[in-house]
Length: 156
Image 1 (cartoon, helix red, strand yellow):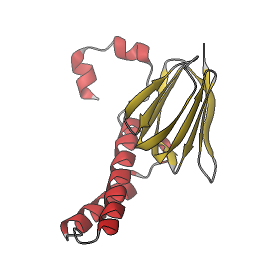
Image 2 (image 1 turned 90 degrees about the horizontal axis):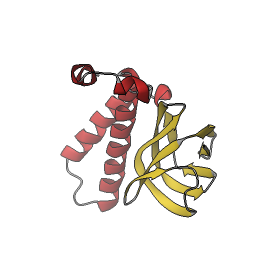
Image 3 (image 1 turned 60 degrees about the vertical axis):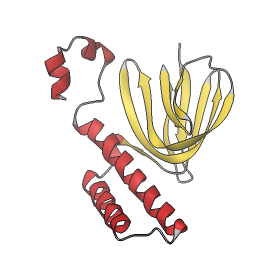
Image 4 (image 1 turned 30 degrees about the vertical axis):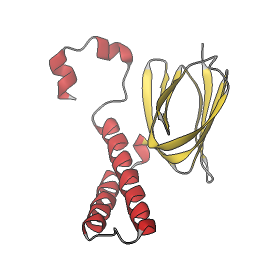
């Protein structure tokens, strides 16, 4: 049994395929969506979307948005979205470094500027985390994980 998952931004459709499971960064925590889920609409936080199809997991960094869930379809309308393979790790690390420097210089007097820098820092960290899933082989079959010893899992 599967559910259609669309990840869409203003610029493009990032992903559109039948999947077995979707994990979303809801504003109140991580949400798991399976086929025949009850209909709902929810706001999304900065975070990671994971889709599972044929036992393989694929990861996306999103910068907030909304998700509409129907029993046979999940539509993620993201402010920004990137597949793990699309993320430039060096650029994301540089963005994180710049945001951390800006935080250290002190922006406590300007709440709007603080919110901008905090959002940039969170966005950069999510992109780094999702990118590392690609580079450490985290996109893999669930069957292969079950067959690993604890030392092999730790090596990832």
